[in-house]
Amino acid sequence: MEQLLWNVIVPVSAAAVVGSVLCGLIAVISPRTFGAIARAASRRVDTQRWLAWLDKEIDIDRYVLKHARLFGFVTLACILLAVWLVV
Image (cartoon, rainbow, N blue to C red):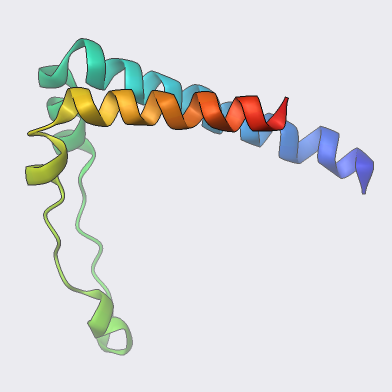
């Protein structure tokens, strides 16, 4: 189990931290670029009838993109807190 931890979980967690930091930095440094990336990455997931209750479209972009710098700072603060808690 310990080998699994070091071979899989730690690299995946490190990649998630690096990705989150990059996302936060882009939101802080350039909200316009952050918005362009968000628009390019947004894809609608088509669900079947059995998941129809999940098929509601929620436009979080109007909240996040209006306050991209705040989102970036909060993201960076959460990452710093998570790293501090782990180390």
